Length: 216
Image (tube, rainbow, N blue to C red; front, side, top):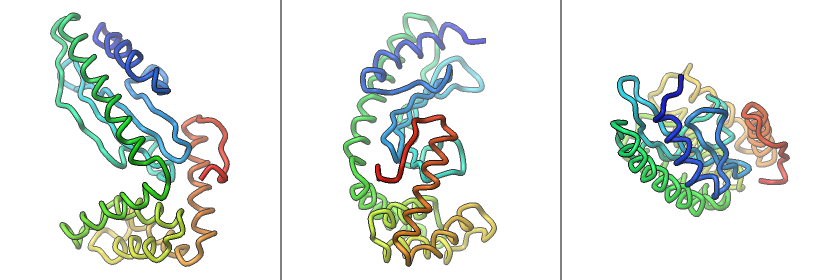
């Protein structure tokens, strides 16, 4: 049963995020902003041990279909704020909500277009690959999809190839999805169509408004 701390979180999130256009996911602690092909996601994450909240803020790429909502870029921003009293917690959560709003604005500016997203993800993926060259990550996959969506097919193939040539489990979801997209990387229109189809399906799963590929 929701406690007083849950109501405080909901009120603080509503005050800070609703004016920016965020929606609350049901009665959960998850809020999101719809950017057509991606979501800004804010989570006031609970603890299993104490009343209170962590703060997670990130981007969810809608071409990802491995979970209803994942934090694909970004994540934990703040440590745990424990509920001790209504007055104390209201101040603490208002600060978290304001921090979430600031980070949401920063992400929206970073990923204002697909070409911007592709450039940022490619740079990040290559940095991670240099640091751990034999350990493929979802960042490589996401950079590959973004690159493919903007016609940078050679770089898309490079990203998927790094996943396939790494030391990861060849039966993993990451490897299988990278293999599928790698097979499409030479055909820009087919890759784009596949990604657009996944975006449309993910939007339907999340009960978002109807969408078509012309919005890419």
